[in-house]
Amino acid sequence: MNDVREDIEEERRQLVATLKLVGPGAPTLAGEWLASDIARHLAAQDRLRGLGSWAARRLVLATGLRLTAIYLDRPAVAALVNAGPRDWVRCITRLERDPPTLLVADAVAGVTLWEHFVHHEDVRRPSDVQRTSSPNLMPVIEWLMTYNRRRLERLGGARIVANGEHQWSTRPAPAVTVEGPPSELVLWLSGRGRAAQVTLRGRPEGTGTELAI
Image (tube, one colour):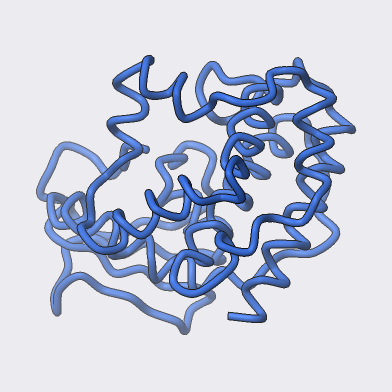
């Protein structure tokens, strides 16, 4: 997990640099959220040395519960989760610190890297900010395949192919194959299908190939 920790810390540094560059009012890929909303969301995860976020991620890993849906459907829950510094400067100051040890340790590290990577993409892509480096996203894809298994099965199963070699599949003969670089596959698996540059093949059993966040 040491490599994942290093990737989290580097991704966080790049995210903060992008947030500073675009400013609080910049648009994002995350629906109506602005850059300020993403900064607040991530800064709130550090509260209590990350204990609350760590517990939630352990619960998700153990049960497969989609807390994201609960978060999006219930504004009161979202307000509670995001409680913390509202001021842009205070949020940035908090994010300039290293992430809490709990959030870069053991099994939750892949989820933490996902949070930082996807929200960095949310901010940088609409403003066309270039990356200086990219993390190893294989642990993120492995987790997202488990997290999205039920939704992928609704398509008739899915095979995910990263860079033409690394593969994950929900069944032996899936209805859909999704190919692309790891970064684009993570976006697609995170409900950002319209922004993800992937190649889709096959005939899904459902009505489309978009995954909800």
